[in-house]
Length: 253
Image (tube, rainbow, N blue to C red; front, side, top):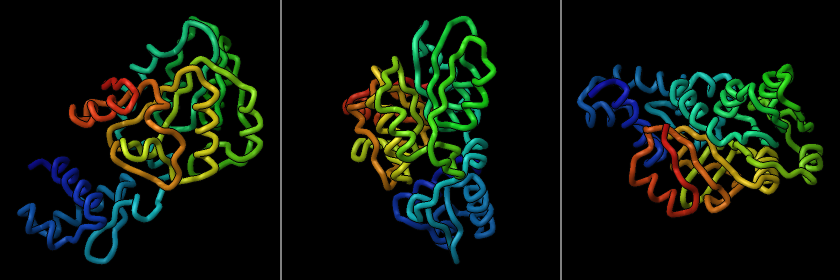
């Protein structure tokens, strides 16, 4: 078993059981305890688990949300492929929403220069990216800035979105499951995401496969509210079929 496969198996067990024990993992995987500790260190650096005495706990159980720098360093190739595939959903002209997120930020960098677009975002990072683009009319949704995600939230943001209607909303998510829909750890950010869904003719979610099967504190949409999920090939066929049965079409980059 390669290190990446072993680490994925450890992460899957942590999410299933709520925690993992170094000694038990070493026996089950037929490796040394030191090898397991190195794997847990890798997973912790990726923002997927938190080390505790004798083992580790998945970040979802702790209510932990990796910051934007940590998330931007994870699954970079997958996020690039997702963003490139999402370009097909950008209209020839009109208005779109780009939600705060690392994959939506990559889409912002790739937006075409051959069409006139109006782009609404609550992301400080995306706002900087698109502000100098001559073919883009950029609107920054104001509000309280969440330092962990660089997203503007709160009543100011919701008031600004109340009268808007766009062609496509491109959304990020922390968790996606058939049972819980789309979820995120923060209630204020969930409220803005919910407003994005209501402000758009079509809703496209950009999410790498690691988010699938996870559920966080605040739900902001059901899968039936989503028109399309664009993810990567790490998502298995069975899970993709279950998601499609709940509403959105699934594309894998």
